[in-house]
Length: 92
Image 1 (tube, helix red, strand yellow):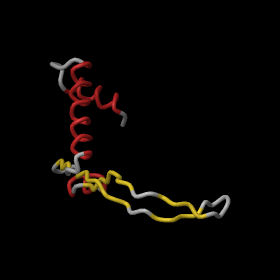
Image 2 (cartoon, helix red, strand yellow):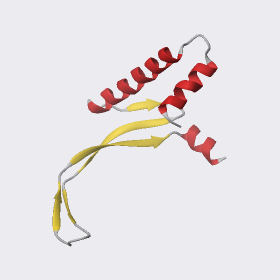
Image 3 (tube, one colour):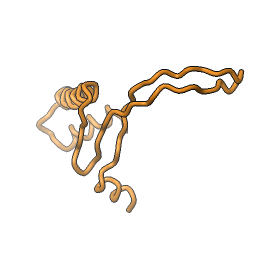
Image 4 (cartoon, one colour):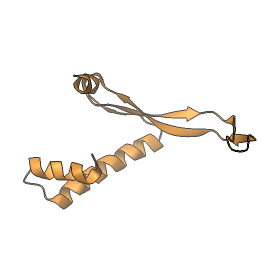
């Protein structure tokens, strides 16, 4: 599902909202989640899952084409863990 499909679902289910208002609401939610993750906070949506930021340490890797060693710097990456309810719904 894409962001625009999500907007359309909201408009279908709630006729009081326009497409533009629905899109603005989704943008606010996603921006708020992104800001929280940037600040190192955890975002938890009960029944759906939680988003956290994990730190990956610096390491050395090999370039598969040339075989030479490459230094990969430390970085932070977003991580999603599914909630129990979502896992069960997908599994059934």
